[in-house]
Image (cartoon, rainbow, N blue to C red; front, side):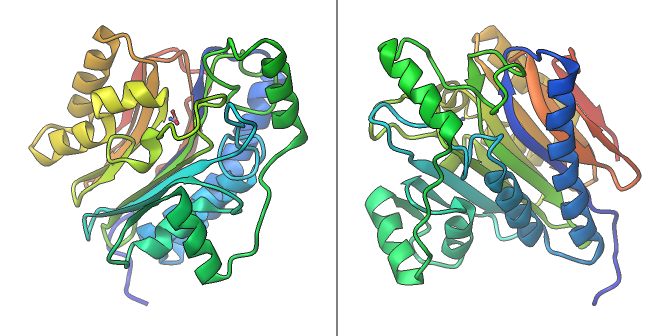
Length: 316
Ligand code: GLY
């Protein structure tokens, strides 16, 4: 294996929300996030590529029913689960993804397969055909809690704007903005970003999430960003691509986050973002009250769960 040239960096998120209720709840989420950070960082230390590490991190987060992606995805207005996921390799500057895919355990694996395909973004019917072609086993990502949540909302005629972000009702209040995301700088200096979601919850059939668009997930050789929050707000800001391109054009990661989050704030958006750059700086920003993010700098782990600040950066 090639000798490590630089110290890998990692940041992940499990969505954003409107409030944290109870430290017991925050601790549960913190444990979930740190477990993923530890496992993915260990892979990076063994020499895993940024793309491999992102896919593995997304798989772990998709498998945790606490987060709105893969198992534990929220239900749409018709009671069905349709998930979206994207992977961007910053070195190849190549985006791939699936939109509104069903009956698969890990949508990020489809995005990974599509990285080397001529057709790199597939929607519902096409992704179902791909699943069949790849002989992935059929999987039902529905959980009891999500079903209960949908039934309650149905009784209320779907008045809520969005479903809850995490499974614990006591942790985050009803208006949630769930998605998961992973951004990595590997030991060879490659950057990759991955994002996966069950969507907003209770949305119209056919609604398309930001998570499988460059607005919600983007990377170049210079930086990578994954977003969470209200998809429509993220798309209107073109947030991930905007931050990454600002860095690519010469702004610091902090400067790019500051400018972009300020604009999102002025425009009254409800969102959050995590990112890192090729120099090894790690950053996050939000207009929502809470961002469920955790990171590894190579020296230490940390998180943003109880941070009131709109943004933060850890210099390389
Ligand atoms: N950010 C996830 C969604 O709105 O679909």
